[in-house]
Image (cartoon, rainbow, N blue to C red; front, top):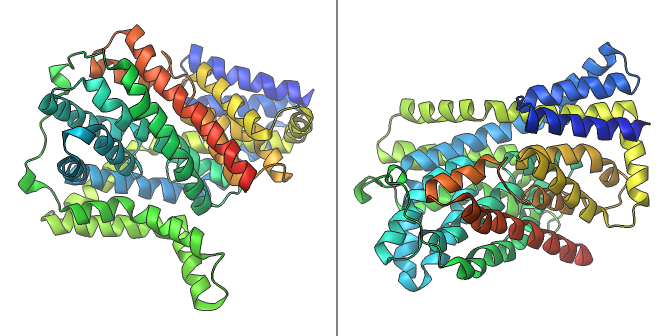
Length: 436
C-alpha cells in the first residue's frame, strides 16, 4: 500500500510539472502533502515532515549553492571564461580546436550553472567556428557535452550537491570519482560523436552571435584559472589527503580543505579580489554581481528544498522502508536502478535537477542500508538525470534556437549527445564499483 502511494505521488508530480506546467516547488509541496495524508499522517504531521525535510536539506546546501552562484557570476561578468577560452585556443591551434573548447567547457562549467555557462560559451563557439571555417555544431558539441557533464555529475552544482547531502556522501570523493567518469563521457559524446554529424552546418541566428570583450579588458589567465578551479582543487586535495594524514594539525587542514562551505567561501573571496577589485571594479560592483547571482538561484533553492521535503515525508510515512525492501528484491544492481529511475523521471518531466532529486527520495534507503557506495549512487543518479533530453527540456530548445537547427536535427545532435553522456556515465560508475 505504501509503495503504491509513493508511486502515485511520483506520477502526480510528473503530471503536475509536465502536463499542468505547475511550478516545481509548488508541485513538490502538493505531492508531499498528498502522499503524507494518503499514508496516514495527519495534516499537522505532514506539514512538520515537510518543514523538517526542507530545513535539513537547505541547512547544509543553501550556503554552497548560493556561494556557487556568486562564484559563477563573478567568473562570467569579469571575462575570466573568455580569457580561459582564448588562451586555450592560442595554445591548441586550429588542429585541436575541439579539444581546446572541450577543456574550456569543463573548466568554465565547474563554477557556472548550466544556463549561464551555455549563454556564455555559445558566442565563443560561433566566433571560433567562423574563424576556422568549421561547422558550428562540430565545434560546439564537445564544449556543450563538458558543460552538461559538470551540471549533472559534479558538485557543487545544485543537483549533485543535494544528492551528496541526501545520500550522506563525501563531496570531495564524489567530485574525484565524477571527474574520472566525466572524462570518457565527454570524449565519447563530444569529439567522437561530432564526427558523425559534421555534415550539419546551420547558420546561427545573428542575434546570438554576441560581441566579445576586448582583450585589454580581460583578467589574466592565472587569475581566471585560480578563481574557476580553486574550489575543485581544495575539495579534491582534501579528499586525497584525509586518508594519508594522521591526527593533529595536518588532519585539521585536510578536513578544512574538504569542507564545501569553506572551499566555496574561499573561492568567492579570491575571485572577488582577483577578478573584481584586481581588475579595477569597485566593491559595490562585485557585490551587485553577487546579489544578482543569488536572485538567479532563489527558485532553484526552493526546488532543492522541496525534494528534501518529499524524501522526509516518504521516510516518516514508512514508504522508504517499503521501497527499499522492494528494490533489494529486484534482480538489478542498485546503481542501475537509480540510473533508470532518474532517466524515467527525466524523460517525463524534462528537468535534470527534478529527476535527480525525485529519485533520491526513492533510492536513499538503499544507501542507508549499505547496499551501495553513496558517492557512486550520486553519480549514477546524476547520469540518469541527463538521459534523453527532448521537447520538454528547456535546454533542448535553447540549443535549437541558438544553433538554428530543426527539431529533427536537434534530436540527432543534442538528444543523442545527452544520451551518450548518460549511458557512458553509468558504464563508468559500474566500472568504478568493481574497484571501490
